[in-house]
Image 1 (cartoon, rainbow, N blue to C red):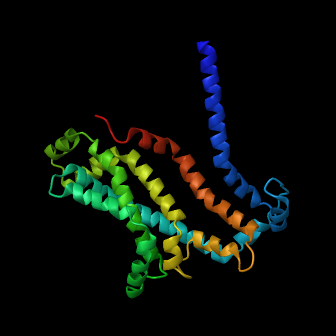
Image 2: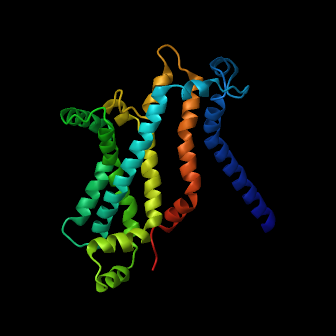
Image 3: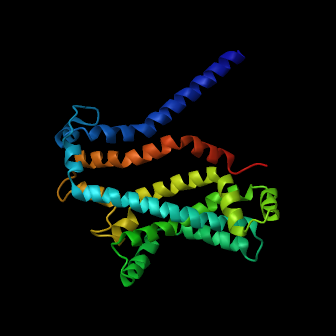
Length: 275
């Protein structure tokens, strides 16, 4: 009876897992397959009719606006991620390894900054960037993305820095290492799993960000989500091009997550270093 119960429980778990997997993957599958269809087939024949054509991809890849926006998104995502990781790692290091007044207050202030809705910040940023001549520039978009990435990185890295044993930094200081050397040569390598996780999520948040890019850019700094949104058209959505462009936007996400999945899982599971 126990074996039967275990088999039934295992079967139920498998069925639930497969159901959740199908529900999660179905929209992605529909988007990918629709990119190989004509608009008339998407409209008239539904999501399960499939007669492949590359016409939508040809139109998307010949659209200079889309190509430039993809380049802008890659640049903004990479630059904002690198800056956010460096600044966020330094802030997390200071919050976990130094004792000073209002340390917890400062940490929770960073968290509160991340929780403020973007819609409430975009107008002040618009006014400020217009005054500083940063509106519709990649520099302005990078700064806007840094504003929500740094607090996230700080809080994600706090447990990783806190978990590093004190003996590491004490031994480094005895050997004559400076504070910067302790940070870069001791802590930075030890918290590398957390840095990978933070980098992936920071890049993905920047890559998918829409509101700041929509309001703070117009022509020169337009990113991929804004350009894809432009394919909705004036009278009817260009579904084939929309889904083809959406599929292209999924490629970096798949490459990053599949390439770094071992490090992502290690970082999420470990949550730091045990010593």
